Length: 527
Image (cartoon, rainbow, N blue to C red; front, top):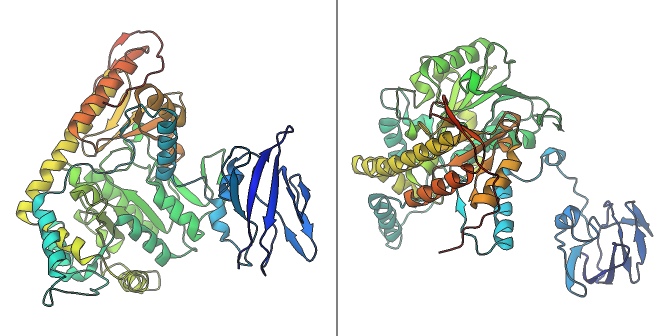
């Protein structure tokens, strides 16, 4: 049961707050909560000074800040003016919190960016924000794909066309299509393909299958879901500010000097190795030679690779698009992928995971069988409507239409990379990836994020959100309409023209030096 209050929050001269609480008493199990500088006045009138408060037979406290700070937000209490109503809960269950959740730092990266963007828009409602941060697709889904989904939707309203639950592993027609189109000549079987609601969901399912006793390695920088899901599963110790990472996780530094690929000669052995290619956020696509090294490394150490190929459709050179292009990879690798960035399915949700029959655990048991059990337990199968869209995506006509969208994003990425390079900054990625990874030597990533937002009204992603190796970088997304990216480039050129720079070519070679006065605050009003 709950015990809540409707209260008025009044400001006091001391800077603390006064809460007049009318308590609606119901039977409730009250536990201990840390308190801060506020006090209750009613039947329970107490002065709380960051200590635990004892009530007859129970312990009670309220975790909140005096004037609406971080602790207050945790309780759902927001800063209010004098006399306005606020609500907060004073009841706790006897259920202990998962201690691994306490290890997580702040919020998940991308919702945190959205919160900061919203706060900026509230401060500057006249500003015209350009979001090049969260990698959400913007171009319309090709008509052939949306028509296929519409047809399936309409068929569901007919007696002959209605279908209920499908196979948890996915529509066999789609699984067959994936093997024929994505994994042509790689020897992948239909039964090794598991259709899902997206790669990120499958990453968590893989982590659930692996359990808390395994050790993991990740690229640094890397997509934060690999790390956060590992922390939640109990695969790490606490976060250390000095290192910027979690204990127990092997961070394989991927610096420009190492061509954004880990130095496997110095990497420690772990049970699971997460690798994304093309990498999010650096944009680097691993070469055949690099992936051959990785597969050999995994075989020597008896490790399993979890290979994320969500951005493989952006590869324009001869870099492998799948880990299974490498001999022997089926014995050591799982591959996760997605229709999200490939086909614009970020809101539709459709992906897949390949678990080869050859892949086994140390006791000889089948990894594929265990993953099948996880899927059947945790998932009722992808939407039949989304899966019909997936089949259409992989048709000849669908692929042609999708590639046109990918070409637009690729052009956007090149424009952004050239803009930063012309401003004297080293910009990586943008060739085999929709992301540009920009270096600001000596700067902190969040400071650069704030500067670009304040001075150009453009949202980026601070590199440190992808791991300690991302400090002093920002990630810029090409997922936008072309005219939007052109406007973003104009704003960026205007901003960086005001700063002393060394202009670099796209391959980061130094051209010349130019100087200009310091930047001033800028807002770009809505049209």
